[in-house]
Image 1: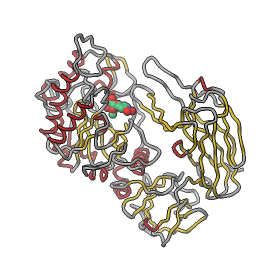
Image 2: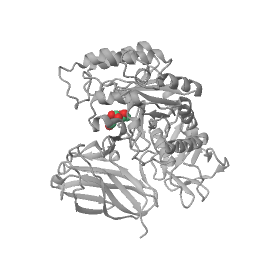
Image 3: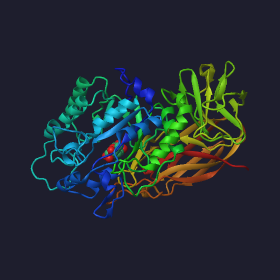
Image 4: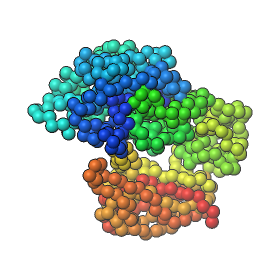
Length: 566
Ligand code: JFZ
């Protein structure tokens, strides 16, 4: 259900678009290692992965002295990255509070030799740097408290009373956070789990009373919240209505770990930001500071480059949203007011950028954003408009072309295939019956979530259709992106396109139904179905249907049409 901004709290949220998530806590000095053993997964879950008893874990506080902590440096890095707000884990699942709390002595001020209120210092730094400040608070899981959820390894006896935890710790601490640190931009709840509708309601009511302008994310539970937090690291394929965000890790862990070097490049961060904004959302990228408080150099370096890029490209991100243009294989597009921005992720080798399904009722003013502002020539071409670009790709992370008079474009919505490009036909773009549009979600290593929209729950005779339009004739290799469990191995499917028809078997892709420590694994793979020649431009239909066998274990991610020379 889209989160419409009925109360108008979200105007600044939409305008912001880009934020810093910080996971920092008692887990950070452990850096994914406990008693010499490396734990593979998200660092903030090490107490759970290593089954560290709460009493033993609590002794870590007495040794934590993060002498490199510098809230102003954190805020400066965020501002220079072009971010507009910071969300800090004030209390994660381990129950340890980064702020002075009268409610529980298990906090930074009373339990550590450092003895400083991290939240207070970050609040001051954000005010100084002109950034919004949000608080992550784990309202249901608290591995330090027998009455809370999540700790299944301590041999606590006696009846668990979640409401007692809520009344004695969660609500009073959230009240402290919303009372003691000035205006709070948003409160970010997590893993709502079994929290009751009444509890979510009482949480929301308290927040509204204390800070009426404070936004609440959807993980408060029970359908409440001002904006939707999608699954971790989940970027939707299509525009999503209302206020929402994608959260993402810079490597594969939220909390700092020494053995995760899978850093996203500055370009990848910028591409994810653009993909999310082009679908109407905010992108909040996480950095996990080291135990000392130092930000990982890889994160500082990458964010600095994204910030440099945003100095020129900012108008295409801040306050921008979906452009309404048809999807293109070479990039993304956003709109802000009458201005349309083309984010050219793949620069055309021939300098000819085709905008399919678009006509101009008046001359189109196009120029580079943040670079050489000389006008670019825009001419009508078969099936759309062509923007003439210089042959050499500009250096910036993502070159952006601005169309100043976007309202002068007449758009024919649809699915367009461009010759010479790798075109994607996604699951959500199919029509048909005998299947369901769903989402596959699975965890690689602990806490590393993956999500993929797909067509699933197939029944015999089910058929998906992609109705496309070719801007120009062309040849492609047709590849099917799918996952198939063992039960559906050798099920028989038929693919048709432009008069051709191919019967083929679906081959088990290596899914794993369950693992000792991590649930199912879903393995998508690519199957080449053949070479497709579209001799004429114009409308074409591609169909995929289940002819025989058990299709229930098949998930269709989409089709790829990879250009070939024949
Ligand atoms: C939760 C936390 O457990 C984790 O430690 C981190 O703080 C992350 C931001 O949030 O993990 C989740 C919660 C929800 C999903 C995935 C991981 N989800 O809905 O896919």
